[in-house]
Length: 119
Image (cartoon, rainbow, N blue to C red; front, side):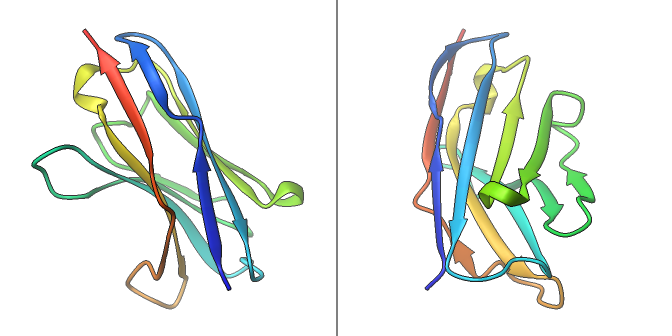
């Protein structure tokens, strides 16, 4: 059974940094995308970043490009989201998700971790 467990959220002042972690288990992710999404109160869930587990190719939403970095540690089966220069509008619940490369939808989701950026 696939499990994605996020950690690392918290409260930070604007301009600060946080690093989120997503521990993945339950299968081999070699042909998967691992992604980060977020959902702010009253808003729809939106894409943040993704990475291919095998090759490490990355993709970012325009509103985080240059501030956030996604990476993975294959040995630890963990994906990270380094968030720098945080803004109050980055406040949201951040979710880790996984999908097979051949699929269009993310099938597996974590429970989320709260990130709050104060002004």
